[in-house]
Length: 102
Image 1: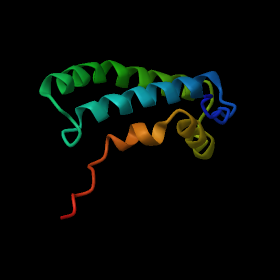
Image 2 (image 1 turned 90 degrees about the vertical axis):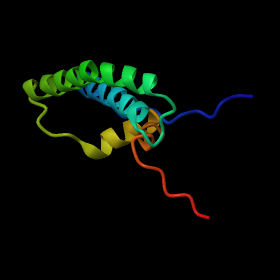
Image 3 (image 1 turned 180 degrees about the horizontal axis):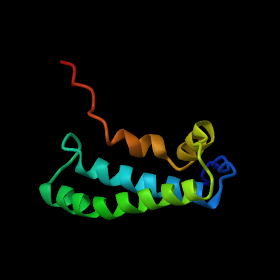
Image 4 (image 1 turned 45 degrees about the vertical axis):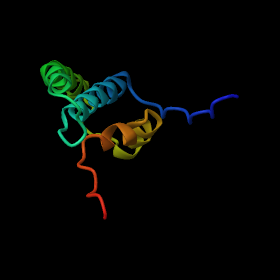
């Protein structure tokens, strides 16, 4: 059985690709730290330790964009890229889940 074909990524600059990749890495780590989704302190601790380095890489990606004259974020295009890369599911781990109904 073949997996459904994903939509193609929108055309992005190399700096925008780096920005999206670093952003999703940070989101994944914050999702692992989120106490509403976590299972153990060790996993959250390891994610928190890695977060500083990944946040610095995200900052560096944005710095490159700015220095290259890419002063605007094209939100609609970047959002399409995030959706193709499963960003909605990954970002959902950052939020607090809804309260259980009785």
